Amino acid sequence: MVFALLFVTSLLVWNRSLWATFALALRSDQYTHILLVLPVSAALILLRWNPRRNGIRLTPGSGLPLLALAVVILWVVNHLALSSPDLRLTAMIVGLASWWIGSFLLSFGTPALREHLFPLLFLFWIVPLPAVVLDRIVALLQKGSALATYGLFWIARVPVLRDGVVLSIPGIDIEVAAECSSIRSSLMLLLSTMVLAQLFLRSISRKIILVLLAVPLSVAKNAIRIFTLSMLGTRVDPSFLRGRLHQDGGIVFFLLALAIVVLLVRLLRQPEVEGSSVAQNARN
Image (cartoon, rainbow, N blue to C red; front, top):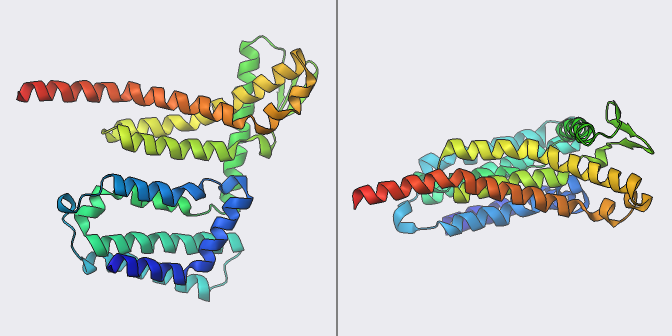
């Protein structure tokens, strides 16, 4: 009941910022991942919820500092003029996520916080990245995708010249524009990889390795898409450069990358399963 009261309070205080965040996620592909954060966090908590194991108890002394931090952020944003609306929204949602985590800690205690630390920290993915940060990420994805695509053309022995994010092959010039950076699918792949690592891997080092691999995999996925469309457009039919595979085919390459992540999970999980079996046999 304490947690419910604090949660409802947050909805009343931060309602405008929360609605603005969801509206941003609905109209902009760059923020679509935000729509998944709350359901995923709630599902991960409920999946491992065990009141007896967690030792639930009120701990005001532990939770109040985070609640106070959220209030301070709220006061600062409302009383100081920030340079841009997106920075204001980012700060407000950081405060909201801090309030939720503080509410959880106050209501259920430190053992419950440790048990559900990942889904609680995962809540910070609801924070919309400010434009200045997002633009830099998109620029890095553009450059990485252009370089990786150049490598694929070189491996396939296709004559290619690269000038920044523009690739020239016989019959076509390809610009890896911001819209072609696949920021949405890259963020979705990163979040999916984090959740899979949490669900199926025990070792922190293996979890970190898997999440780090998601970054170059995102670039490789985008490069394969650009390479495939370019080859089909120049060798088969120019309509491939403007058709459905170009407009809506991102999901195909996303699923391909996700399948690779699942394979990596199996490979990283195998030593853990074998080690657990050896330990069990030793106890028996």
